[in-house]
Image (cartoon, rainbow, N blue to C red; front, side, top):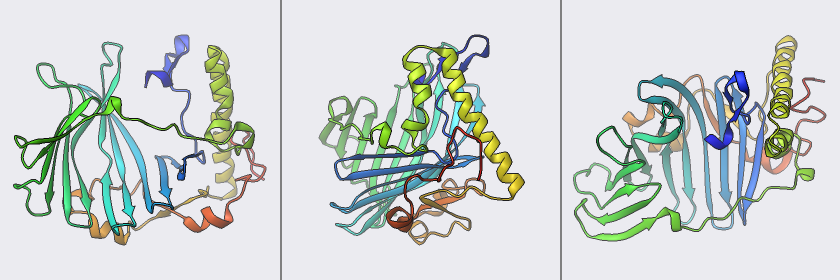
Length: 315
């Protein structure tokens, strides 16, 4: 979080890379591909689609953040969800988005912590109940997690339990928490593969790397004034676009995602338990689904013709 901030003297601390409406991030790792798009600005909603056709795995979801101040820090409530599908087992998994609390503001060292209890629900009838907690004044550890896996309706007889810190080490027990430890996971030793993106010259003007190239170059050079100026170009252009859209009576249309206004999704309806449904979406954010047909056939570069994100002009 600190890496995405910069100081501007009397203006205080700002966040230079603030997603704009229509921003697209495309990446891949091997045959796994990621499509992410900022589909709404008020409220801010980011929609994503992750897939690997070779192994038959796909996931889609969206997130809308609502921020509020609390005595213990800043609470970022995440509205939205993801659905993961595995072709091999013909299974779906409903994954909610945990809320984030930003602590340490008074000490000048802000850090995020997940909090709350969430359920990952599988179409096979299994449920993972995950409880996130953090460090309090007198007890607890940062980024703590406790989880149980059980057959739906049989919460008191868990098949597995997990406890530890999601940012450090977690232990998997067979059965209850005092059961045999069958695996220890240290996330710091896990290998990760970097995402690959197109070179800047091959990116569309609306892709993140190219759109923010000026801001990133200024940040790398340590030029704070140029950082502000480059960011302002995009912000002012976006405000002008919204004004022109309103005058012309046109509405911004996302490239790869479609908004479902009535929240009707047969997969979601089959997975969500009643107490879980309320936190998965809101009328303000809507529900967003990936449009596979547009991805495969109808969307070509340049994504928006001659329209650029840092030029407030609509043909």
